[in-house]
Length: 354
Image (cartoon, rainbow, N blue to C red; front, top):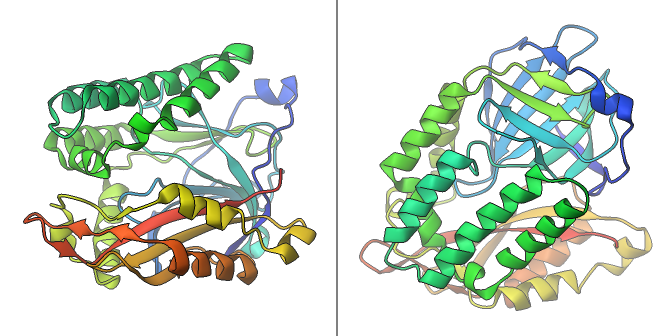
Protein backbone atom coordinates (compact mmCIF):
# COMPACT_ATOMS: atom_id res chain seq x y z
CA UNK A 1 0.00 0.00 0.00
CA UNK A 2 1.11 3.55 -0.74
CA UNK A 3 0.39 6.30 1.73
CA UNK A 4 0.40 10.06 1.97
CA UNK A 5 0.74 12.23 5.05
CA UNK A 6 -2.38 14.37 5.30
CA UNK A 7 -1.40 16.31 8.42
CA UNK A 8 1.78 16.66 10.43
CA UNK A 9 2.29 15.72 14.07
CA UNK A 10 -1.28 16.19 15.17
CA UNK A 11 -3.37 14.61 17.87
CA UNK A 12 -2.87 17.35 20.43
CA UNK A 13 -6.55 17.82 21.23
CA UNK A 14 -7.86 16.37 24.47
CA UNK A 15 -9.93 13.24 23.96
CA UNK A 16 -13.28 12.75 25.60
CA UNK A 17 -13.73 10.75 28.76
CA UNK A 18 -16.05 8.33 26.96
CA UNK A 19 -13.36 7.57 24.38
CA UNK A 20 -10.80 6.98 27.11
CA UNK A 21 -13.09 4.55 28.95
CA UNK A 22 -14.23 2.49 25.95
CA UNK A 23 -13.22 -1.16 25.94
CA UNK A 24 -10.78 -2.00 23.14
CA UNK A 25 -12.06 -3.47 19.92
CA UNK A 26 -10.27 -6.82 19.85
CA UNK A 27 -9.34 -7.97 16.35
CA UNK A 28 -7.92 -11.34 15.32
CA UNK A 29 -5.66 -11.70 12.26
CA UNK A 30 -7.34 -12.54 8.97
CA UNK A 31 -4.10 -13.05 7.01
CA UNK A 32 -0.62 -14.40 7.69
CA UNK A 33 2.29 -11.98 8.09
CA UNK A 34 3.62 -10.86 4.70
CA UNK A 35 7.27 -9.82 4.33
CA UNK A 36 7.47 -6.97 1.81
CA UNK A 37 10.94 -6.52 0.28
CA UNK A 38 10.87 -2.89 -0.89
CA UNK A 39 13.74 -1.10 -2.62
CA UNK A 40 14.88 0.76 0.50
CA UNK A 41 13.00 -0.83 3.40
CA UNK A 42 11.54 -4.06 4.79
CA UNK A 43 7.92 -4.26 5.90
CA UNK A 44 5.93 -6.82 7.87
CA UNK A 45 2.24 -6.45 6.97
CA UNK A 46 -0.92 -8.13 8.23
CA UNK A 47 -4.69 -7.68 8.10
CA UNK A 48 -6.89 -7.88 11.19
CA UNK A 49 -10.64 -7.92 11.78
CA UNK A 50 -13.65 -9.27 9.95
CA UNK A 51 -15.58 -7.42 7.25
CA UNK A 52 -16.68 -4.03 8.50
CA UNK A 53 -13.84 -3.77 11.02
CA UNK A 54 -10.73 -4.38 8.91
CA UNK A 55 -7.45 -2.92 10.20
CA UNK A 56 -4.16 -2.98 8.30
CA UNK A 57 -1.01 -3.14 10.45
CA UNK A 58 2.54 -2.62 9.21
CA UNK A 59 5.96 -2.69 10.87
CA UNK A 60 8.55 -1.17 8.52
CA UNK A 61 12.31 -0.80 9.00
CA UNK A 62 14.56 1.39 6.85
CA UNK A 63 17.78 -0.13 8.17
CA UNK A 64 19.09 -2.35 10.98
CA UNK A 65 19.80 0.55 13.36
CA UNK A 66 16.61 2.53 12.71
CA UNK A 67 13.56 2.68 14.99
CA UNK A 68 10.70 0.81 13.27
CA UNK A 69 7.90 2.79 11.66
CA UNK A 70 4.39 1.47 12.26
CA UNK A 71 1.10 2.13 10.51
CA UNK A 72 -2.42 1.23 11.65
CA UNK A 73 -5.17 2.01 9.16
CA UNK A 74 -8.78 1.14 8.43
CA UNK A 75 -11.48 1.77 5.84
CA UNK A 76 -14.31 1.64 8.38
CA UNK A 77 -13.01 2.96 11.71
CA UNK A 78 -13.04 6.74 12.21
CA UNK A 79 -9.82 8.41 13.31
CA UNK A 80 -9.52 9.36 16.96
CA UNK A 81 -8.38 12.46 18.79
CA UNK A 82 -5.77 12.88 21.48
CA UNK A 83 -2.20 11.64 21.80
CA UNK A 84 -1.74 8.21 20.24
CA UNK A 85 -0.47 5.60 22.70
CA UNK A 86 0.87 2.16 21.84
CA UNK A 87 1.29 -0.80 24.19
CA UNK A 88 3.05 -4.03 23.22
CA UNK A 89 1.55 -6.70 25.46
CA UNK A 90 2.68 -8.08 27.82
CA UNK A 91 6.16 -6.54 27.43
CA UNK A 92 5.28 -2.90 28.15
CA UNK A 93 4.43 -2.03 31.72
CA UNK A 94 2.83 1.22 30.54
CA UNK A 95 1.50 2.54 27.25
CA UNK A 96 4.04 4.52 25.22
CA UNK A 97 2.95 7.89 23.82
CA UNK A 98 4.10 8.43 20.23
CA UNK A 99 4.19 11.34 17.80
CA UNK A 100 1.74 10.30 15.10
CA UNK A 101 0.94 11.47 11.59
CA UNK A 102 -2.43 11.05 9.95
CA UNK A 103 -2.01 9.06 6.73
CA UNK A 104 -4.21 8.46 3.70
CA UNK A 105 -3.52 5.15 1.96
CA UNK A 106 -4.62 3.20 -1.07
CA UNK A 107 -8.04 1.51 -1.23
CA UNK A 108 -9.69 4.00 1.12
CA UNK A 109 -7.59 3.20 4.20
CA UNK A 110 -6.83 6.06 6.63
CA UNK A 111 -4.88 5.80 9.85
CA UNK A 112 -1.85 6.77 11.90
CA UNK A 113 1.85 6.45 11.22
CA UNK A 114 4.37 6.58 14.08
CA UNK A 115 7.74 5.33 15.24
CA UNK A 116 8.43 3.22 18.28
CA UNK A 117 10.88 0.61 19.41
CA UNK A 118 9.43 -2.87 19.54
CA UNK A 119 11.06 -4.61 22.46
CA UNK A 120 13.29 -2.22 24.38
CA UNK A 121 13.18 0.42 27.11
CA UNK A 122 11.63 -1.77 29.79
CA UNK A 123 12.97 -2.86 33.15
CA UNK A 124 14.77 -5.95 31.83
CA UNK A 125 16.47 -4.04 29.03
CA UNK A 126 17.43 -1.21 31.38
CA UNK A 127 19.10 -3.65 33.77
CA UNK A 128 21.06 -5.18 30.89
CA UNK A 129 22.02 -1.69 29.69
CA UNK A 130 23.31 -0.73 33.15
CA UNK A 131 25.49 -3.85 33.37
CA UNK A 132 26.87 -3.51 29.85
CA UNK A 133 27.60 0.23 30.13
CA UNK A 134 29.55 -0.34 33.36
CA UNK A 135 32.04 -2.55 31.52
CA UNK A 136 32.20 -0.87 28.13
CA UNK A 137 35.69 0.68 27.89
CA UNK A 138 34.82 3.58 25.57
CA UNK A 139 32.20 5.10 27.88
CA UNK A 140 33.20 7.56 30.60
CA UNK A 141 31.27 8.00 33.83
CA UNK A 142 29.55 11.18 32.70
CA UNK A 143 28.28 9.53 29.53
CA UNK A 144 27.10 6.49 31.47
CA UNK A 145 25.30 8.69 34.00
CA UNK A 146 23.49 10.61 31.22
CA UNK A 147 22.59 7.36 29.46
CA UNK A 148 20.96 5.79 32.50
CA UNK A 149 19.33 9.07 33.54
CA UNK A 150 17.72 9.35 30.11
CA UNK A 151 16.12 5.93 30.59
CA UNK A 152 14.91 6.89 34.06
CA UNK A 153 13.42 10.16 32.79
CA UNK A 154 11.75 8.37 29.87
CA UNK A 155 10.11 5.95 32.30
CA UNK A 156 8.99 8.80 34.53
CA UNK A 157 7.59 10.62 31.49
CA UNK A 158 5.40 7.63 30.65
CA UNK A 159 4.30 6.91 34.22
CA UNK A 160 3.18 10.39 35.31
CA UNK A 161 0.41 12.80 34.36
CA UNK A 162 -0.24 16.55 34.35
CA UNK A 163 2.55 18.90 35.38
CA UNK A 164 4.78 16.04 36.52
CA UNK A 165 4.61 14.58 33.03
CA UNK A 166 5.59 17.90 31.46
CA UNK A 167 8.51 18.27 33.88
CA UNK A 168 9.70 14.74 33.10
CA UNK A 169 9.41 15.39 29.35
CA UNK A 170 11.53 18.53 29.66
CA UNK A 171 14.01 16.65 31.81
CA UNK A 172 14.33 13.85 29.28
CA UNK A 173 14.80 16.34 26.43
CA UNK A 174 17.53 18.19 28.36
CA UNK A 175 19.37 14.96 29.07
CA UNK A 176 19.41 13.63 25.50
CA UNK A 177 20.48 17.04 24.20
CA UNK A 178 23.37 17.26 26.66
CA UNK A 179 26.89 17.10 25.29
CA UNK A 180 27.67 14.00 27.34
CA UNK A 181 24.69 12.05 25.99
CA UNK A 182 25.20 13.13 22.40
CA UNK A 183 28.87 12.14 22.59
CA UNK A 184 28.01 8.51 23.39
CA UNK A 185 29.53 6.59 20.47
CA UNK A 186 27.09 4.94 18.11
CA UNK A 187 29.35 1.91 18.41
CA UNK A 188 28.20 1.53 22.03
CA UNK A 189 24.63 0.83 20.93
CA UNK A 190 25.82 -1.36 18.07
CA UNK A 191 27.99 -3.40 20.44
CA UNK A 192 25.07 -3.67 22.86
CA UNK A 193 22.76 -5.04 20.15
CA UNK A 194 25.39 -7.60 19.15
CA UNK A 195 25.63 -9.04 22.67
CA UNK A 196 24.32 -12.59 22.98
CA UNK A 197 22.51 -11.57 26.17
CA UNK A 198 20.78 -8.68 24.40
CA UNK A 199 19.79 -10.81 21.41
CA UNK A 200 18.53 -13.51 23.74
CA UNK A 201 16.44 -10.97 25.65
CA UNK A 202 14.97 -9.55 22.43
CA UNK A 203 14.17 -13.03 21.09
CA UNK A 204 12.62 -14.05 24.40
CA UNK A 205 10.49 -10.91 24.50
CA UNK A 206 9.43 -11.29 20.87
CA UNK A 207 8.22 -14.79 21.68
CA UNK A 208 6.15 -13.47 24.59
CA UNK A 209 4.24 -10.84 22.59
CA UNK A 210 0.52 -11.51 22.36
CA UNK A 211 -0.99 -8.24 21.11
CA UNK A 212 -0.51 -4.58 20.22
CA UNK A 213 -2.92 -2.05 21.72
CA UNK A 214 -3.38 1.30 19.93
CA UNK A 215 -5.26 3.99 21.86
CA UNK A 216 -6.61 7.23 20.31
CA UNK A 217 -5.51 6.19 16.82
CA UNK A 218 -9.17 5.56 16.14
CA UNK A 219 -12.28 6.69 18.01
CA UNK A 220 -12.15 3.43 19.93
CA UNK A 221 -9.02 1.66 21.22
CA UNK A 222 -7.96 -1.23 18.97
CA UNK A 223 -6.29 -4.40 20.26
CA UNK A 224 -4.56 -6.38 17.51
CA UNK A 225 -4.07 -10.03 18.48
CA UNK A 226 -0.69 -10.41 16.77
CA UNK A 227 0.54 -13.46 18.64
CA UNK A 228 4.28 -14.11 18.94
CA UNK A 229 6.57 -11.82 16.96
CA UNK A 230 9.56 -14.20 17.11
CA UNK A 231 9.24 -15.64 13.58
CA UNK A 232 8.20 -12.32 11.94
CA UNK A 233 11.21 -10.52 13.42
CA UNK A 234 13.58 -13.26 12.26
CA UNK A 235 12.20 -12.69 8.76
CA UNK A 236 12.72 -8.95 9.21
CA UNK A 237 16.38 -9.43 10.13
CA UNK A 238 16.95 -11.61 7.07
CA UNK A 239 15.36 -8.94 4.87
CA UNK A 240 17.53 -6.21 6.40
CA UNK A 241 20.71 -8.17 5.65
CA UNK A 242 19.62 -8.53 2.03
CA UNK A 243 18.69 -4.85 1.93
CA UNK A 244 22.22 -3.85 2.94
CA UNK A 245 23.68 -6.10 0.25
CA UNK A 246 21.44 -4.30 -2.24
CA UNK A 247 22.96 -1.01 -1.02
CA UNK A 248 26.45 -2.35 -1.73
CA UNK A 249 27.31 -2.74 1.96
CA UNK A 250 29.60 -5.44 3.34
CA UNK A 251 27.16 -6.92 5.88
CA UNK A 252 29.70 -9.06 7.72
CA UNK A 253 32.18 -6.18 8.05
CA UNK A 254 29.40 -4.00 9.45
CA UNK A 255 28.75 -6.53 12.20
CA UNK A 256 32.23 -5.74 13.54
CA UNK A 257 32.71 -2.02 12.93
CA UNK A 258 35.07 -0.21 15.25
CA UNK A 259 33.35 3.03 14.20
CA UNK A 260 30.16 3.78 12.28
CA UNK A 261 30.06 6.69 9.83
CA UNK A 262 29.59 9.89 11.85
CA UNK A 263 28.86 13.45 10.62
CA UNK A 264 31.65 15.90 11.37
CA UNK A 265 29.29 18.75 12.23
CA UNK A 266 25.78 17.45 12.80
CA UNK A 267 24.49 20.70 14.32
CA UNK A 268 25.52 22.71 11.26
CA UNK A 269 24.06 20.12 8.89
CA UNK A 270 20.71 20.16 10.71
CA UNK A 271 20.70 23.95 10.86
CA UNK A 272 21.41 24.38 7.15
CA UNK A 273 18.56 22.05 6.22
CA UNK A 274 15.92 23.33 8.62
CA UNK A 275 16.75 27.00 7.94
CA UNK A 276 16.21 26.37 4.24
CA UNK A 277 12.46 25.66 4.40
CA UNK A 278 11.32 25.75 0.74
CA UNK A 279 9.59 29.11 0.22
CA UNK A 280 6.93 27.65 -2.05
CA UNK A 281 6.04 24.97 0.49
CA UNK A 282 6.02 27.51 3.32
CA UNK A 283 3.54 29.73 1.48
CA UNK A 284 1.28 26.70 1.00
CA UNK A 285 1.75 25.67 4.65
CA UNK A 286 3.06 22.30 3.51
CA UNK A 287 4.93 20.08 5.97
CA UNK A 288 7.14 17.07 5.37
CA UNK A 289 8.75 14.09 7.09
CA UNK A 290 11.67 12.82 5.02
CA UNK A 291 13.86 9.78 5.57
CA UNK A 292 17.27 9.98 3.94
CA UNK A 293 20.00 7.38 3.48
CA UNK A 294 23.36 8.79 2.48
CA UNK A 295 26.06 6.64 0.90
CA UNK A 296 29.37 7.50 2.62
CA UNK A 297 32.68 6.77 0.92
CA UNK A 298 35.82 5.50 2.71
CA UNK A 299 37.04 9.12 2.44
CA UNK A 300 33.97 10.43 4.33
CA UNK A 301 32.23 12.12 1.40
CA UNK A 302 28.56 11.84 0.47
CA UNK A 303 28.33 9.89 -2.79
CA UNK A 304 24.56 9.36 -3.01
CA UNK A 305 21.37 10.68 -1.41
CA UNK A 306 18.57 8.13 -1.29
CA UNK A 307 15.03 9.07 -0.22
CA UNK A 308 13.54 6.22 1.76
CA UNK A 309 9.92 7.37 1.67
CA UNK A 310 8.10 8.69 -1.37
CA UNK A 311 5.07 10.59 -0.13
CA UNK A 312 6.53 14.10 0.15
CA UNK A 313 6.48 16.96 -2.30
CA UNK A 314 9.54 16.76 -4.57
CA UNK A 315 10.49 20.33 -3.61
CA UNK A 316 11.25 19.16 -0.07
CA UNK A 317 13.20 16.17 -1.28
CA UNK A 318 15.31 18.22 -3.69
CA UNK A 319 16.08 20.77 -0.95
CA UNK A 320 17.24 18.07 1.47
CA UNK A 321 19.49 16.22 -0.98
CA UNK A 322 21.08 19.43 -2.25
CA UNK A 323 21.95 20.38 1.34
CA UNK A 324 23.31 16.90 2.05
CA UNK A 325 25.70 17.01 -0.89
CA UNK A 326 26.87 20.51 0.03
CA UNK A 327 27.25 20.21 3.81
CA UNK A 328 27.37 16.55 4.89
CA UNK A 329 30.94 15.42 5.66
CA UNK A 330 31.78 12.36 7.71
CA UNK A 331 34.30 10.45 9.70
CA UNK A 332 34.13 7.25 7.64
CA UNK A 333 33.14 3.88 9.03
CA UNK A 334 36.06 1.71 10.18
CA UNK A 335 36.13 -2.08 9.93
CA UNK A 336 37.41 -4.48 12.59
CA UNK A 337 41.01 -3.69 11.57
CA UNK A 338 40.42 0.05 11.78
CA UNK A 339 40.41 0.55 8.02
CA UNK A 340 37.91 2.94 6.34
CA UNK A 341 35.14 1.21 4.37
CA UNK A 342 32.12 2.27 2.34
CA UNK A 343 29.08 2.67 4.55
CA UNK A 344 25.91 4.70 4.98
CA UNK A 345 24.28 7.22 7.31
CA UNK A 346 20.55 7.67 7.90
CA UNK A 347 18.80 10.81 9.04
CA UNK A 348 15.18 11.97 9.39
CA UNK A 349 14.31 15.54 8.38
CA UNK A 350 11.10 17.19 9.60
CA UNK A 351 9.80 20.38 8.03
CA UNK A 352 7.15 21.46 10.52
CA UNK A 353 5.19 24.68 10.88
CA UNK A 354 5.16 26.22 14.34
